[in-house]
Length: 144
Image 1 (spheres, rainbow, N blue to C red):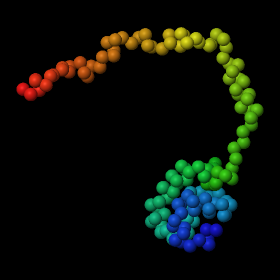
Image 2 (cartoon, rainbow, N blue to C red; image 1 turned 30 degrees about the horizontal axis):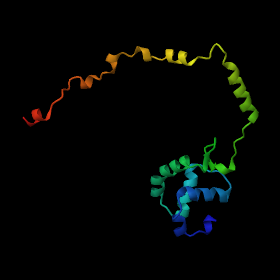
Image 3 (tube, rainbow, N blue to C red; image 1 turned 180 degrees about the horizontal axis):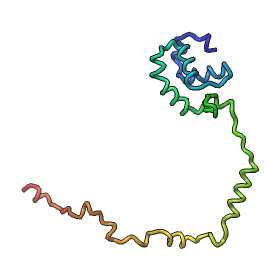
Image 4 (cartoon, one colour; image 1 turned 90 degrees about the vertical axis):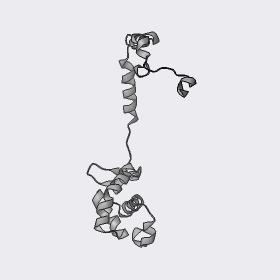
């Protein structure tokens, strides 16, 4: 339990780890400000430190795979939420997508190349104008 840990041990933990332990222990969701305020209380951080570090804490929560931001603006542990996928919906979408392509719409490889602009490129387009003014100088000319 967090309340039983001494400050020295808490200071060894990251803010996100403390937040994870706090949410597990209290079994409730919290917004960023309240959650970080609780962490600051546990660590004995001042209001100035709270103001300086809350942005980094928010970034840590958003980039962590362990947390999820709920619609009400509160954070919770991702482990407490599951994604429900209806496998029938996936198969229905796949079958509908397959039916939309008709024989007339299928293109051969030749048709795909004809659609590209490769034939429009001229040899003159390949020459880079930045190098056209350069000349080759041999070592004797460099010494003079």
